Amino acid sequence: MEYRINRRTGDRIGVIGMGTSSVCDAEEKEFAETLEYAFGQGVNYYDLATSKPNTFPAFGSAFAGVRGEVFYQVHFGAEYTRGEYGWTTDAGKIRQSVEWQLKNLKTDYIDYAFIHCIDEPSDWRRFRDGGALRYLLAMKEEGIARHIGLSSHVPAVAQEILDTGLADMLMFSINPGYDYQQGEFANGSAEERMRLYRRCEKDGVGISVMKAFSGGQLLNEKTSPFGKALTEYQCIRYALDKPGVLTVLPGVRGISDLRRILGYFSAAEEEKDYSVIATFTPQDASGKCVYCNHCQPCPAGIDVGTVNKYYDLARAGDALAADHYKNLAKTASDCIGCGHCNRRCPFRADQMARMKEIAAYFGK
Image (cartoon, rainbow, N blue to C red; front, side, top):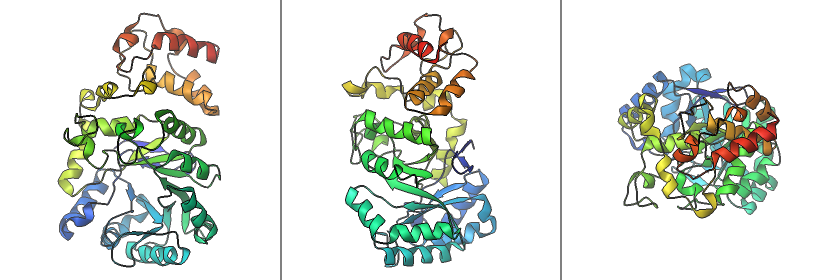
């Protein structure tokens, strides 16, 4: 397992976590074995916006003894009191559901208490003004909710709530389809979505990624909006390369799925290379660096993707980005103008021109 730090909370989070929308359909024994295997492999971040209520007692039984070593995303608005998943902004129903979840998880605290699935401004107003936010903040004041998160599929709505400064974590749907206006949750332009990711990086708000495979559609050429299948490893790497992302949360049906997903760490770099998506990108996204590092190795030793990322973040107002850039072993000023990166870039970015621009910006 590899880990990244949430700068707002200090939590060390595995880059692959686990969603629970499918594993709840497994037999009880396999469910338990899957959780045991996940923990043994260093998976320490779990999203509990699940499909069925049996998820909660399963986690309670599996992790009660190691509760301090795992992080739970618990969603204020995911409602299970009727025996199946429901969505609500009603404060009374949220309180009832959260209390039930805590009891079945055998825990007295929540690591990340999420404002759940806010995709419309009206959803946010009801949550904010109807008592649900007041309840969430009271839970935080009491120390039961340690940190606050937000789940959304819409960049503009996420930005509005991030403006409040409440969120330490954002759960957002990131994959090549959605980022390039293909699929059910393809909300916002490529640039609008990237602005959200950069803002999270700038503000230290970690991103946990849902729907990395677009509900499996990207993995099958018959359902992929691009007419070509991507692999799980390509989708995971794509998400992890985005600014602000701490962890990707694939849903698994059982232990065999989880073993395959965790094979990401031993897979060859070629298996994770998602540069094929360059053939899918819309015109307004062409010519822009997506930090894929397909241009590597640079003859001058420059980490071209990272140099571009720090430049973009610095321009977005990230005060730390300039320091990170200046601490790189090789910077844009070391570019020798050989053209290797331009020839290799599948997204047709003019990296030679970018290196001159970046060197001038940072004054080196």
